[in-house]
Length: 431
Image 1 (cartoon, helix red, strand yellow):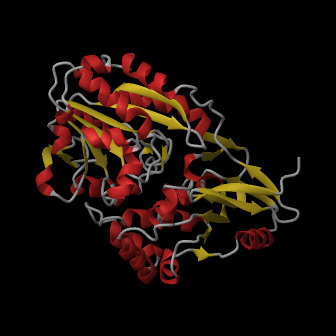
Image 2: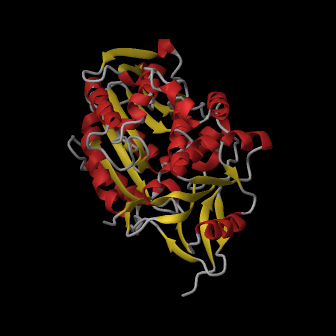
Image 3: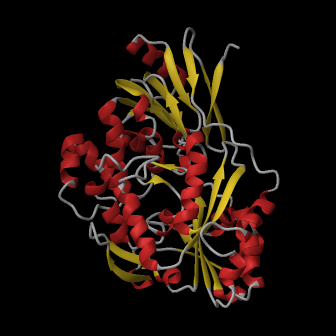
């Protein structure tokens, strides 16, 4: 069947990209995982038969307080499916509503409030019955100092609302993460509700430039190893781990001890997410996975890094991202300004001596990895002219024209399309 266009995830919908005449498309998608016919039953079954832990009702029995971590608005976690049954289970076991807090694991992102918070929670029943609050990494008084990690000396500061709760539960989405290997589980704790010194240590060049700190890798990954030590230092922690498909439907859920249940979810999804490619491509078209990940240029960088293993050196990577909320934080803007002023090599040189990264400059560091390998182009509808300038990449207002130019530049009609962006990890499987 002849393909005339490819739909990329873009904003809250899709962006149809027409194939130039003579172009040949290879579409790289996740393996198909059937959605759960009854998500509620699957969630309750996970609570009743957890991995490496007692059932949730038993974990809650005799406890007076619980803290439930959820990811912030940048992650499409189906909170509306599991928060109410989780809270109802805790209350039935004896924890009062007043003893339960849902804590948004913002890391160093901005807080989620008002209508955005309601969207994030996904269930007014939850908002009406328990406290829902944001983590603030720069509020020193709200963190407990747990010392430093044994191998790398990472300072451990964790939100006291989580540390002091009698029952600690992290919830999240298990997907490829371009530094920590996989999101979810232990990552929702640190950096999710960590002090800014912890987060900035994680994002220092010492970690970021480590060749094992890449997507889909947990073996020897320094970020993952530090995260494991931190959750072990906390004591008993549990996690609800979700996996969704390209249409945001729930396809798998695990619950249990935070490390074991997370690893079980990783093992379930890895084969369908890490996709072998028999060749590399001179032209790749990808997305930032649509809403909510493509709300800012800051988050868009993730989509630039994920496909690098199949980009021919000197090739062209074309990104499509709505950036509906604009650029990102003030600190990220400042880092991009420094990149434009100093250039790639001098910018990286300013990072290597730091034990604490400046806030959000790590995303600029990750963008440089893509810029070192090839030409990066961006199609967006959400950035001002000045914001476009400090991206440091080539801006295109016509993605089809950019495709035609790339084909001509490389004299190669083969194009790889990755509609779901960083949620799919293509890997060169050639000799």
